[in-house]
Image (cartoon, rainbow, N blue to C red; front, side):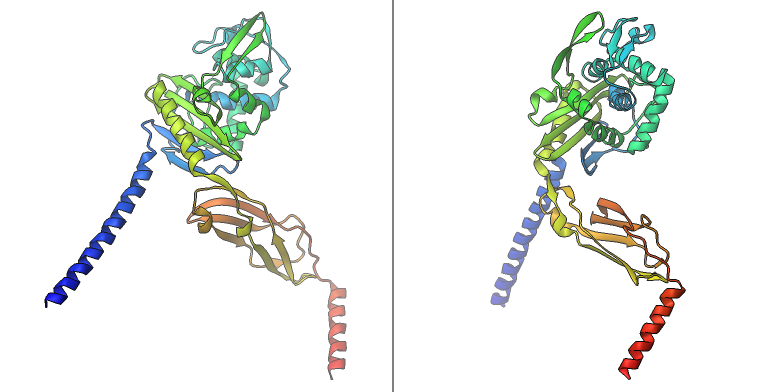
Length: 388
């Protein structure tokens, strides 16, 4: 009886050690998750090339976004006008309130310089001048902004002005702002402007010294751009970007209580993305082979082997969790034209879609005609003759 008690005690001891180890591991995991917290109203970390969301808080909630609006303003400007165009500054633009560069009415300033004033100094006057020139009016320009936001995939964004000053129906989300910023980073001139620490430029009759309001450019080594914003309703906002090797990160912080908080939390989000993820070539995981039967075709099946180079932002260990998904039509009926959509292929982790691509036929397949059937019949006759 004593031996049984000793053995039972030993088993209980071992179980308690393992249980404590499991609990400690779980607590460590929870602690690691809890380490990345922000007090700001909303935030997100997004990888630039794929749009993968690496972390988020209230990222789909519609909120005021203040001057981060100006990133969309800049996109619409460069896609609809030349950088060297001379913009005549109207009285309305010159008298715009809030954060301004101080442009003077009835002077000419290049669109390029206005973009620097827009994104570095957050000039509301530059925003209005750009809108009037590119759109013909502020109202027409705002229509272009909303159209472009939708095209980018920012479908919960609606603008009523080009600068982000508070109005009832001017809103976006952290997710949408991240998508818009990823798009902007793909435009060389905008990427260059947002990464500029300071510059002196001509604004008509005077030169202006412009210093970037994004403090992280000076305090975080991998930061390479972004945009600040503030209004009474939006509170402090920040979009910040960072790059290390081939990994590009966008971090968005919306509704921070203080300037220090927005930069502190923005930096934490950038660091989390840069330190925990890397771009991985997952071509070894990709082995798509499509074989679709064809009814009445001059070929029995549509066959294609798909080889793609796909780079994904992954944490350590995630590569092993990737699986392939296919949603391909089960059968085709001839004739089949080249360029017909036949389904989707993708790469996933759990329910998250990391990569998805539409698949189109790369060649056409003819429908069998009477000659084809005659040839088949003749082949059958000769085969039977030699077999007998």
